[in-house]
Length: 104
Image (cartoon, rainbow, N blue to C red):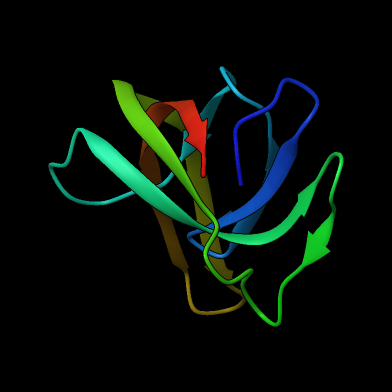
């Protein structure tokens, strides 16, 4: 499918779904060292909308990694009554800032 201004795609990455247009920048949890990424497309909209089962055949979204950023710090505390047990665990996810270049 040719890239058009009014077309959009719904992509899936790391168990999350994003609605993207050309030129959008999203934060996605993507592993690896790649600078260009190809996403699977769940649905495509615009002049000729299609819904995949589970993915749309022959359609993909190509993107470029712009930056690597860290997400907010999450703190999880565990407490057990009557046993004097306390524990605090911290976690901070790493996200890649990705720019959508092409819907093909």
